[in-house]
Amino acid sequence: MAAAAIRAITKAIAGKGCAHARLSLARTAELLISHSQQKNNSTSIKMKPSDFSHNIEQTPWGMETRLISAVKIANTPMEWNSASCELSSAEPVWV
Image (cartoon, rainbow, N blue to C red):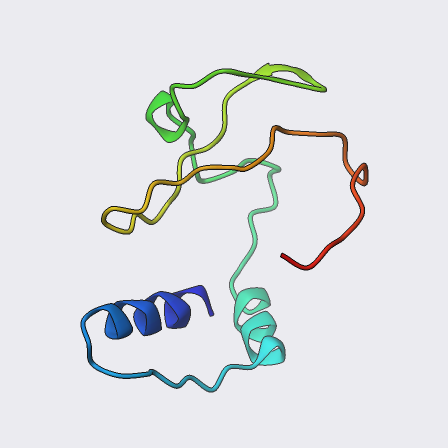
């Protein structure tokens, strides 16, 4: 689903019109669970220092760094409008 959204944005930026995608949450879930799972409680993805932002910030859990974005869009920096906060500490709002 994220790939379809990125493709649509890329197409629009390139001036190639509006993209359409037919997606199904149920089908996506079925595809995800159809892959074999590891049984030894280990992860196949090893995090590296380069996976994290260089900025250190104060959070309710101590000093932390954020993961960097897996996707970059030219001239569009990844940034947050607010600091980390306790889970369920903010009211949901439409922005």
